[in-house]
Length: 423
Ligand code: ASP
Image 1: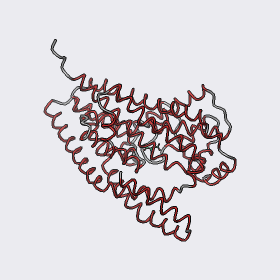
Image 2: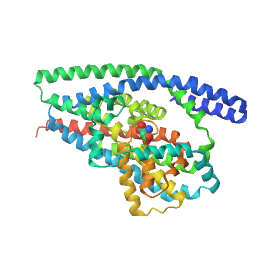
Image 3: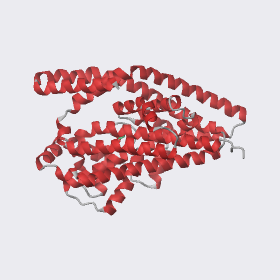
Image 4: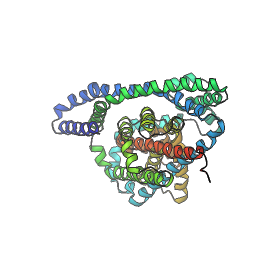
């Protein structure tokens, strides 16, 4: 937390000095790219190193520990239901606020022209990437989950095929004779433990790395763009805060015995890691460690829910996608009636599932969504400058929703497994 504050303040001071005394700007830029970024990278790369073995081992272990394949059904059912609920509520809240405040209609002509021109090259590249995305079909879904070459997919950091493979290994493991099943569980537990220790190494670096990452972001992002988009940014941050602290607390109150205050206190390392890395994948090792060690979530639930969540449960991203589409529609004066907005809600949830847990991954999907509503996809340029900051916020929400789901599902699994009380 302190690292975050120090980084934000330090970055803002250097950036403002650069604005006032332009001769210092090149040195500040150098400091950001040559010193602060590499420092942050050490932390990020430590986390990325462990993602593949950790996802594989914790997910396979989760299934092997269940012992019976049938126990996977209710666990998966509850998990996917909560993922869907979280994302749908997020988008609905976002669209509601965008409809009430209408920040897109309040943007003046000059700001609009400046933003569209300034980020036109980035927008063109994003549009190109959007056009390369495979159209949603049964075939593309199979390719997404089961590509022709598992190893190449893993090398490219596609987590979904890895998840499928780990689930298959876990499922096959439950059918082994008991002694072998336990030996397999032992091995997977050791791998998980090793990776968690590496996460601990990363966490000792966290305060410094978080400060470096945040200072660099503030130096590079600049505050002028945020000012130009202030109403949009404020609306988004407010609705994300409501979803994070409101919806998540409500879910905990309704479906679990945990106190929301204690929950948020316990997961603060997870929140700070997500905020400073803008990556659900990079935060996954921390969320597994915190869920098991601080929240007492069982290895099988954490191992099953969190890797799936980091890849599929993008509550903040879905909310963001819906809001950006509506915002750009408002700027261009494209009317989206209630029916279209319901379609938008469904599409935002579905496309958020396909977003990878890395920084800026939702941009091409948003360009695709804009095109499907006949809104010029180049309009993505309008929000480009603020995307990095908003990515930090939406990733925090994405990850928090995963941990909430893990807690709720774990309590339900424990209750289902508990013997009936004597009558
Ligand atoms: N950065 C987000 C995440 O990792 C994905 C996105 O919305 O761009 O969860």
